[in-house]
Structure formats: C-alpha cells, structure tokens
Length: 184
Image 1: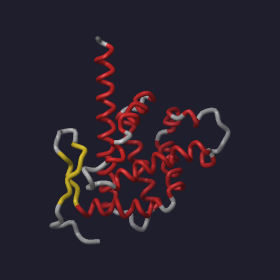
Image 2: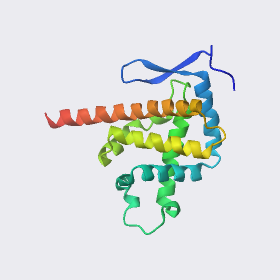
Image 3: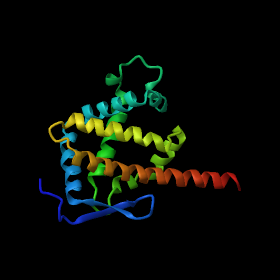
C-alpha cells in the first residue's frame, strides 16, 4: 500500500467536538474501505463476534437488549441477536467505509434521529460508545489478523469516533430539547 506521506488529506464530516472538521489521510480512508470489503464477506459471523466482544467487555450491556433476557437460546444461535448484530455491524461498517465520500456518513444521517432516540430511551451513555469501539477493534483484529496493523487500528478508531460523535451529538441535542420542553 502506498505511503500516506505527501498524500492529500481528506476532510470529512462530522465536525469534531471542537468544531473543526477531522482530516483523514487517503491511506486511512483506503484502509477502512479495503478492510470493510473483506469483513463483509463473512458479515454475519463477524457481527456475532462483534456483539460477543461487547458482552465480554461489558456483561451488563445485555440489559440494553430485551432479546437477551429470559431466553434459553444460546447467544450465537439466537435469531434476534444475529439479526440485530448484523444490522449494527453493517450500519457501522458501511458508514465508516463512506469516509471521505459525499461529506461522509450519509447512511448514518438518514437514520440519525431515530437511532439517537432509541439509544436515549435505552439509557445509553457516552461511555458506552467506548465499549463498542473496543469491541469493534477487537473484532476487526480477529477477523483480519493478516492485515491488522497500527495504521488499520487507527483508521478504524478514527472512523468509529466520527460516527460515535455524530450519534452522541444528536443524542445530546434531543436530550436538551426534551429538557427544555419539560421546563416550559
């Protein structure tokens, strides 16, 4: 793969917490896209592995998912887990792979309001996004051991952080709007 030295940076939305756009190298963009294409080949298995990592890191996270409670179906065989894990994994990967295209994250933007509302209703906090990030990075490392490198890890970490920031900002906006409405 070509070095990023001298490569033109790619500026993409969303804005960082400080208001400036995050800049990604063409190499980082290419790493995310290339690795996502490989991960999609076995998306269902990677998605289940992703959720398994989330629950290994934070077992209490099972409480966010009604389909994880009061069931005797093994995690890996639970059709509701498999369906939800695949939806989350694909949305995350597809949105991350848009890095540098069309202002980035159009896929997420189309569902942002409802995703934020759902996360708020479940009590998801900012710190929970770090658990998901760690689970995603572990899943990519396990799924692509021959490609895993510090550069790939950083590319995915940056892409995930941008996605998470977008969702958290919408969650904060909705929470603030709800609080303001309750005070009127």
